[in-house]
Length: 255
Image (tube, rainbow, N blue to C red):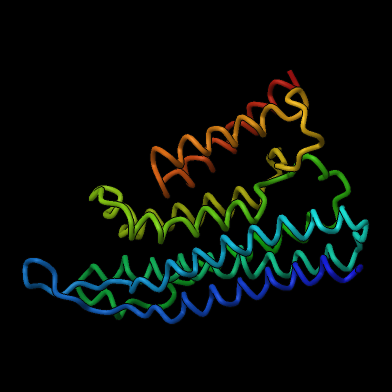
């Protein structure tokens, strides 16, 4: 029985590995645009990676829940969870950014021949995630609150971008996702948020009372509304709401 939560954690890792396979099988291809010119695109397979990162997040939630229900929480499980998370929500999302950077540079003349040094900043994301997880593992004060954005939240944010790219009909959003400077900003902001000690709300429910969990219920309600209105674009919007709500709660509790 005590190994059941660990099996869930390993499934998280498997889904992260599958996501990486889909990301790395999506080499850029050249297609003819409406004006007869050739343009570089990422094949649709990359959004399958987003799906598996999402499945990994579900399993990541369930393994802790199963461990608490079976009362089999252990230090081994904690370390194993972090190792799986750094792959599913660090390495895989970092590779998504790597591919989008390639696509962004490919819009330029001779962009397919860009030096790899311009793409390597994408790997700052898994490095920041690994740092955040290592700090979490030795910190005993992060039960119902976090220091820095949790790596699954950062991973899900980045995993949403391929879905937004493929399913958005707004030219402004497409152009933004094809802008290399947008991705460098994402790298800096997401990495900083993970490595920082900013107080972030944990999404674990202490109980089901509104009094103790109203911020979590509010965030869930906002997520549902945004999902209905904005589809996949809701993910970055909810991510921003999560940060703002966490910081606002900290200010009200320390005022």
